[in-house]
Image 1 (cartoon, rainbow, N blue to C red):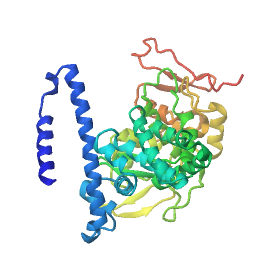
Image 2: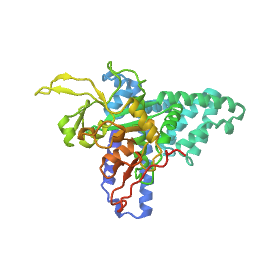
Image 3: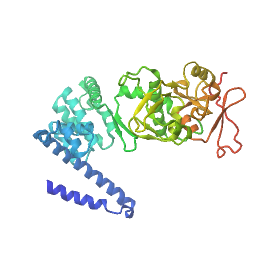
Image 4: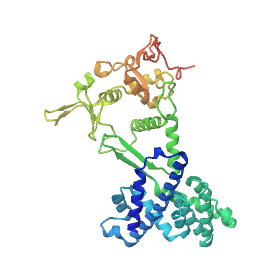
Length: 416
């Protein structure tokens, strides 16, 4: 096998070096189909190898706590992905050999094999191995027409086709099995990138997915005709809004004896001169513009540092816009004041029209409510903010958007 796989690897490597731009459309499609078939056949081989290694206990002998952990280190997989491979390898080895053969014949994909194995396990527990064997044939045939998601939905009612007398009981068993799979596979992975950003991946169970969508969907709509963010960017910003709201509630458990908080270190001189970067407690830096935006609606905790950077004294924090002043701001603006935005007060920051570091006072005349998106937008410097003669905020658009720069207001929150 090793020699055969080495030869296959050499052939695939040669294909990878081929200039695909020279192929005609028909040849491109044929090559894609062939590559897909090879991928499934190799997946069957890979699962067989994993099953044999797991059965022999080789990963444990080599010092790993489990086969999944060993695969994570060996193949650079996540533990959930590795565990799913081990589980599927076990299912294909112990279950109906028709699934393994269908994958080796490239009649089904790896994801379809996982769906079929899960479904057949449920069918076998409800109706026995003979009926499970029939289910494999039907599901493999359906796999030629349906993707894994639809195949799983169809699988919940497969006994309607092969054993209708026990279909209702088996359907309930399938739902119970799906709940167990969802509980087993639920996870969220946070991966810190080299530049301080975070890659967020995971799988939510149905209940958590419903909660997440209920919370995030109202915040993902465009905030107005000027909102040029992509759907993915809007979801990102909505998640940030959810985090801000959670931190404002004061109901999160303490962390290290302190309320949860975002800590940014910068110099006062750099903040005033708009040139000072900030440093998160994780060690990653923030741009000066971001530091000034965060300082608009944050607790300022002055600290005196020695020449070597050691902390000599920490003063009492001073919250900039809070309490009665914030309530007055809510009564006046009723939400994000940017033209066309419908975000309510709980999603908004209090922005200093003239920045506090520039000598701007902490007063109603120098404050305006802005949602997270428009707070960043205003800090980019393209829009100017001021209070009109009636004491309500108005926004002057950049010249490229409106050469006449006629002030605009938010009419969404105005009382009728």
